[in-house]
Amino acid sequence: MSQFAELEAQFSQALDRLRSAVAARAAATEERPDERVLRERIDALEAEKAELVDELARLEAKRDKDVAALDDLIAQLKPLIAEV
Image (cartoon, rainbow, N blue to C red; front, top):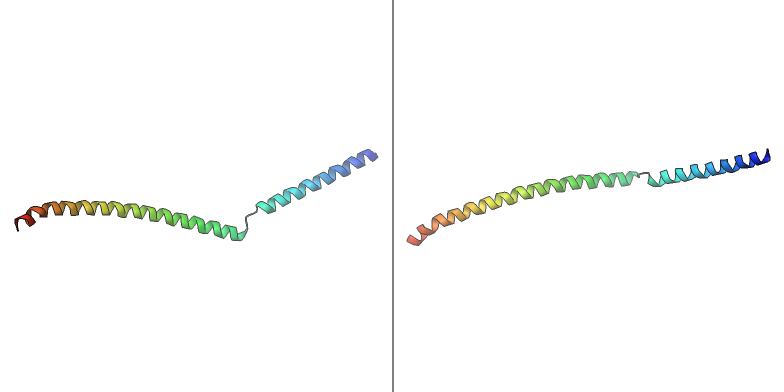
């Protein structure tokens, strides 16, 4: 019977150590409130960056279109300027 009691005590100690390790791991991986706030801020900034990249692409396309229109206008005006 003493062997059984000894094994039971060892088993109980091992379970206690396992529970402590699991609790420590859970506490270590638990996201802290300040980390959550920072993560939300990063996500918001990344979304804003994506919007700005899209706007930049639209503005560059508009600029290219405007430059092409100006080149066309200059080409049309060159003969008129040469006559003067």
